Image (cartoon, rainbow, N blue to C red; front, side, top):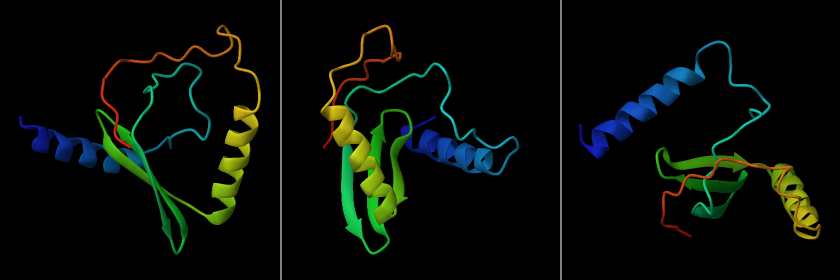
Amino acid sequence: MSAGELDTLIERAATTRASKEPVVSEQPPATVQAISSPGWRLHHIPQGCLFSLRHPGHGWVSFVLSPGERAAMLTVMLAQALQPAPVAAEVQPSVPDFGGRAH
């Protein structure tokens, strides 16, 4: 299977999953597999902000953030940036090394 065919299969699977029950939880799972320093893009659009993150397996995943959501995210990120880093035992995501970074 080519990368393009696999991308199409993943997209179809994600679209199908979005219509299935139970819905994806509003809360993230207790343990996560996190991507370190993903590529990202922000574009100002009439609805607010188009926020895109690059995942090495899912490709570019995009979200439209309203002006209020964008302000809330900025507030949380700024507050966290001004705090000391958490103790290592508090947060331990599994971070696979996929290499590369696109900004």
